[in-house]
Image (cartoon, rainbow, N blue to C red; front, side, top):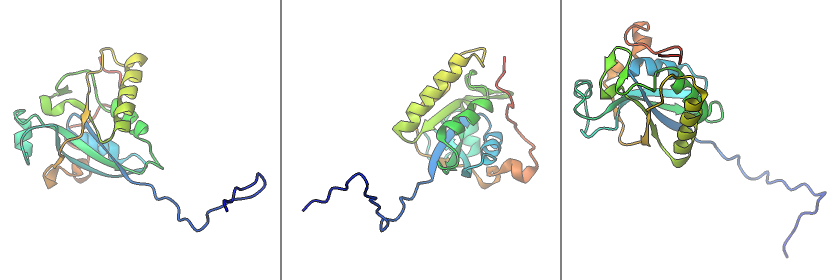
Length: 185
């Protein structure tokens, strides 16, 4: 016989364990990865950051390889985050505010395709959120030029050499920086 709860009956499944949430991953290219990593590592809910290379054609590129521009890789930061503490949309807000997404292959004095503005999405929901966020920022008029950020599927992530990991933390914030304001002309 099928039991159908009536409107006044409390139906609880206390024997079921809570559904665990998953730590998620996001990957961003916004210029020199040292400053980008530093910015994301300070966001509450971010559980880890790793700098590396993505979007190119050479297997296991080195920093020197990526800096030649011939491998097609972007300098990226792979961010792990707890979606119960910080949303992907909030990470996108950080992304738009730490660099100029309107300049092709350039961030400040850093020039080359490895410094391009890029979002590498890990699932269809991230793609939709990234496109929606880009369109909203474009329409807001914050930037004087249109956003040219590439939004593409995540490919193989190649971890950068150890001396690049947590660079600002190890070197007191010296080295390439990030923009603190989106009002870039």
